Length: 212
Image (cartoon, rainbow, N blue to C red):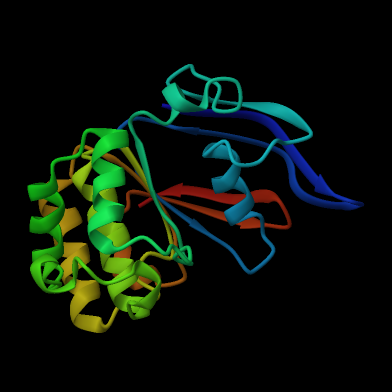
């Protein structure tokens, strides 16, 4: 369970998160919507412990991700919108994930295969030299292979072609029904068959929270 109470974040005089309160129960499939600047990505960074807010609290299964980030994120995976410019090869990136999260390489390879990316063909290439779509497939496979209790996605299909988007959604529908999934996405139609809760944000506030 993710429990957020009275969370406020300011950058200078601009309020990015405005005394925000939100609980996400285990197993929920949540879509967070809103225009650019609504506070969506800031909220996700706060959940991941990447950002210290001015006031309020976040607990992930009763663990504060700022105080004890390692344990708070032990069962949480994240797929970013913008792949980092890593100079590691695909194989080295997979090895790092395996060493830090006890992921099985075969699971990573299988998810890449389901997304039509061959590990055998691409594993020696530097990650930063891959196409945008290939980078996204690698990051998705790494996140899914961890089999985390909770997975956060920030525009996960933005760099994928229509066929890859469909395969990605089908994987989630078939294999991640019991997981907590949290999406930031402008492609509402793609996740309609997955999400059961839609949260709309504007100027750091939750203006709508409804089950679907």
